[in-house]
Image 1 (cartoon, protein in one colour):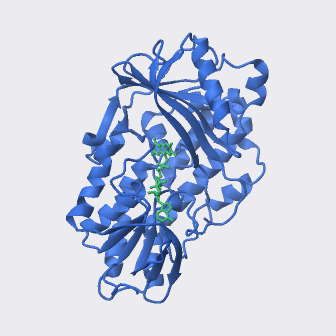
Image 2 (cartoon, rainbow, N blue to C red):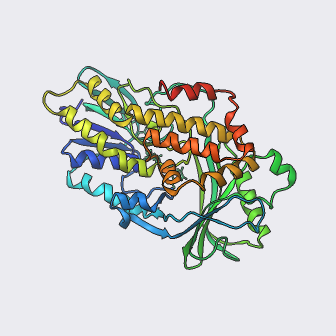
Image 3 (cartoon, protein in one colour):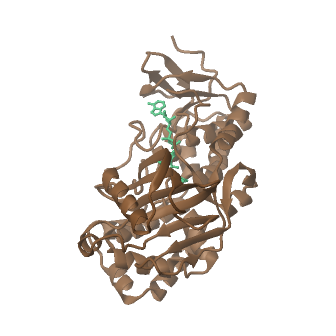
Length: 419
Ligand SMILES: Cc1cc2nc3c(=O)[nH]c(=O)nc-3n(C[C@H](O)[C@H](O)[C@H](O)COP(=O)(O)OP(=O)(O)OC[C@H]3O[C@@H](n4cnc5c(N)ncnc54)[C@H](O)[C@@H]3O)c2cc1C
């Protein structure tokens, strides 16, 4: 039997995207119901990093579990290469605090959560019905699918291979510190632990590492993006070799992180009835892999549009979905997404030395430009200006790589004009 229809929105999932949008809707008085296989209070498996000014801007600095002032990268090939200081704080979110931050408004609103998995979604003029594995039917005016990057319910065009950001990391104790005390290293591209042949042929990877304090460090070997993704055993081998060259061995593994998610998913079809949020809606930044900052910045506009659409005269199911997609992916953000995907396509073709030269130039841009680029907070004209400046400043090896149009690059470039 279908419930009476008092629920406005069913949210699928209990990850960061689901809790974020559920909280924003509850705060606006929308009647929301959650559906996820696990309890929404279950701890999330991933560690979530974010730049300090992003949380400062949102007045959420208290949600950071760690904050580093000494932030840097290495773009030279030798161990003796000096660090490039970033001069911007970086933080790791306290996952329990973030979860609580979103969970609390849901609880205050008495939002019901059902344990289960969606297996099908049906639509009619008034709204949609989610069918669960157990055969329950959950009716609502609109379904928001926040069930992650591989949702079967959110349709997007097939534009060829999707690149994955892959990483293998260890949280633990090491025989010597993998980074300086109190330091955060965004990208360490030094590669003297690799043979000549590996440098020439193997996909470039870098170390992402930080000091957690009290003798505990996080060291993660990461591939920015590649299709197919770099396998975990290759990443693990590279991490251990990198550490070994510095005379460092792993003494205690407290946690292993296996990271893999799509970086350059095409935008979803914005006419469809199911509305995505988070990984399902291609919200991962195609150049950096970050998403949590975007969730925090973009949930209010989506929730506002839905709350408005539900008011008198209430929008029909199709119209409500269209309003929601429009609020989540306005034209400006669609164009920026196209630009980022175009840029990533270039980077994926770069050799290790081209990548090192590219990032050296990128981080020599004025701070507000590279920070705005990485956090997707520049306007479209400002983003284009940053990219033009990058091109002008880049050495010829990088310019040559940026100019050649191979594969689907032209198609992606045209998307900027007509997403
Ligand atoms: C290891 C790792 C590290 C990352 N690090 C960062 C980082 O540092 N900073 C950053 O900004 N981003 C990071 N990301 C990228 C991105 O933020 C994460 O992938 C994020 O978890 C995506 O959030 P989500 O809520 O969209 O999906 P998920 O976190 O994948 O959550 C999906 C939810 O949907 C549920 N679900 C699945 N199927 C169904 C179904 N059929 N019905 C109902 N519920 C369902 C799942 O059980 C889960 O609760 C990382 C990703 C990974 C994998």
